[in-house]
Length: 316
Image (cartoon, rainbow, N blue to C red; front, side, top):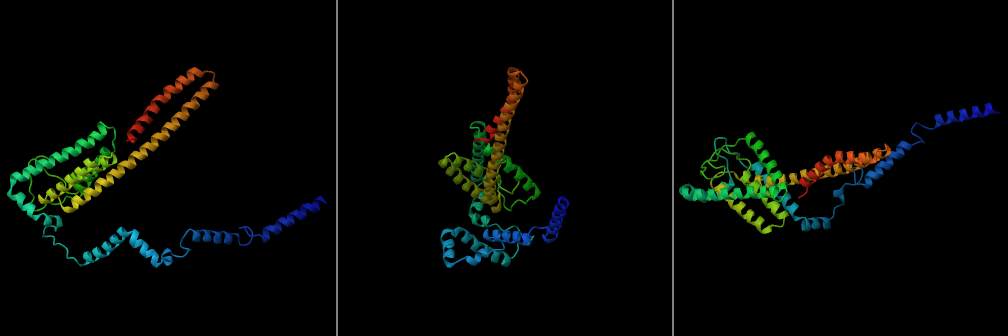
C-alpha cells in the first residue's frame, strides 16, 4: 500500500510537470503582460491614447488665457526661426553687429568727446562695484550667511573659465578710463559681465532678506551700469544679458550646495548621537559605566562639533 501511494504521488507530480508550463498556469506570462499594459495605459504611457487626441477647443482657450507667457514664447520661437534662416551672416572682415551699440550710439559719441564725463561715470561705476563686494562679504562675515559669497565664487570661477576659453576681441571704439574697474584700464574678459552678475547676486540676497528698497536701488544702478558699459563699448549686449542669467543661476546653485551640506550635517549628527548611545550601552555591559560614558562623550564631542559647524554653514 505504501509503495502504491508513493508511485501514485510520483505519477501525479510528473503529470503536473508535463501539463503545467514553466511559467505557471497556461497563459500566466501573457496575463502578466496584459496586466502591465493595462497599468501603463492607465498611467498614460505609449499603450494608451495620446494626450493631444483628448484636447478640446475649451482646453486651447484655457491655455491661451491662463498660460499666455508660454504662448508668447511659442510665437517667439516661430518668429526667430524665420529671422535666423533669412538673416545674412556678418562677414568675418566686419565688426560684430550689436543692437545695444546701435541704441547707445549717441552716448558713445558723448563719452568720446567728453573725457571728464567718462572718467566721472567710470568712478561712480567703480564705487557701485565696491558696494556689491562689500554687501556680499557683509552677508558672510557679519551676518553669517554665506550663500551670496558662495554664488559669487561660483560665478567668477565660471566666468574666468569661459572668458579664457573664448577670448573675444575688444569692441571697436572702446572708451576706457584709468579709474574704471578693473582699475588701471588693464585687460579683462568680455564674456560674461561680472559687474552685472555680481549686482544680481546681491539684489537676490536683499530680496530674500526683505530689503526690497535696497534691492530696487541695486537693480536701477545695474541698469544704468549696463547702459554705460554699452556706451563705452566695454561689453557686448550678450555679455550683459548672460550676466543677469549667470547671477540667477549661480545663486540657485549656491542654494543647492547649502541644502546638500545641511542634509549631510543632519545625517552626520543623527549617526553620531546614535553611535554615542551604542558605545555607552556597550560600556555598561562591560561593567565600566562611568568611564565608558566619558570616553564615548569625548569621542563624540569633536564629531558633533563638526556636524554643528556644517549646520551653521548651511543655515542662513
